[in-house]
Amino acid sequence: MKNISLPVKPIFLLTFTLGSSFIFILVSQPSPSPSSTSQKLNSMARSFVLWLHGLGDSGPANEPIKTFFSSPEFRNTVWSFPSAPSNPVTCNYGAVMPSWFDIHEIPVTAHSPNDESGVLKAVKNVHAMIDKEIAAGTSPENVFVCGFSQGGALTLASVLMYPKTLGGGAVFSGWVPFNSSIIERIPLEAKKTPILWSHGIADGTVLFEAGQAGPPFLEKIGMSCEFKAYPGLGHSINNEELHYLESWIKTRLRSSS
Image 1 (cartoon, helix red, strand yellow):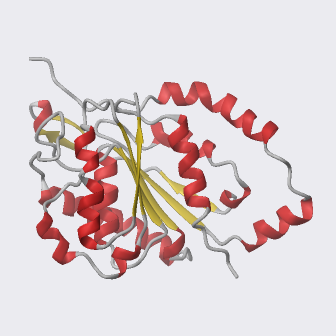
Image 2 (image 1 turned 135 degrees about the vertical axis):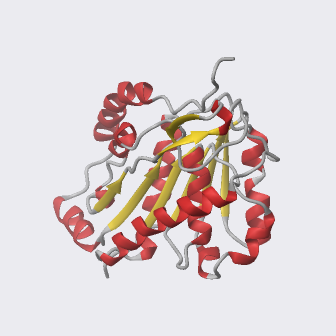
């Protein structure tokens, strides 16, 4: 039988559209006065965006995403695009590939079995990346964890298990990677971290129902979640989602004052 793998986001689509999108931003947005821009840049503190890729992908392949974030508020942003270690993946008949944790079946549904031990192991690695950045001087409130597909599921787990309130977590085409028993282990401060959840209605790999199960799960915890559904979008990320992510993060960035 042919191996089944999670499609990664259409990087070729992104690279083809980055140029026109960036030019549009430059042309259409009014230019702020030099003095106001300088004041804003001087007041913006260091921020950190950690992007977690999907199954079989790599960190460097996702780096074009940061070119969508052209607003002056991101001049002091540190970006990180780590690559997952290579591991055997059950849904691919044990084939070894970049994977944060094991995935048992495709498509992923709201009731698919989870590799909770693997998820929690991966969470420790993500937390180490966050801790390193905070030690370098970034406020936890200016730390944003984002991810697509498997990386989206890991994003959710990492934010929920972190002992401090972060700036936010953004899940794209992801799912809840553990059962409700984990709720008792979620730190109080983590519950204050806002979540943005985006999912394509036409997703045939991580079904829309898996994404829809996210907000009710978070409501049980008492967390804030903004859920955005994209009609016609399959298992990928489009420009609209990334532009919205830019504005979503921008409104949550803290100044140095």
